[in-house]
Amino acid sequence: MSAEKPKDSQPVSVYRSRYRQPVPEFIRASGKADEYEDLLSDLEAEHCPQDLSEQMFLERAAMAIWHSARVAEEERAVYEKNLPPNKELAEVNRLMRWSDTLFRSFVSNLRGLKNQRRHRRETQRTRAASSKSTSTPPAAKPTASKTPKKLELSDDTKPRWIM
Image (cartoon, rainbow, N blue to C red; front, side, top):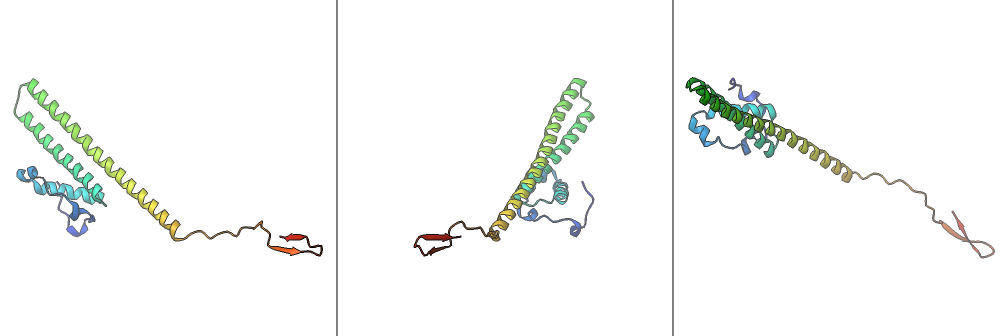
């Protein structure tokens, strides 16, 4: 799938080793686990997941790409079988519907990844703003008091308020 890259040149995701799912059994049984790992590593290097949700969206997108490649192999095999035209057309149509479904899945997962990142950034901004507002309260403005400051008694013993 991809050319070999030196391990130290790839960006490393915080969640890659901790939350990465094992290669599914059906891929291991096909003998192509290394190709799947390369595909997933390329997606991780491109998108650098920052949390578990982002990692899961990437793994689902990788699975959609993987299945799409298998559908393309099946389509080639249908043409090589030299089936009667009506059976060949029916089989190719079935595979194309499956391919379209996989493409929608891939796009949906990338959209989910994008939405998750936007939500995470908004949450971080909100937390940062709330921590700033609680850590440094604004200075209180002096307000002019309209209450009397002093009560004096005048010579005629009537109280007089001085402001």
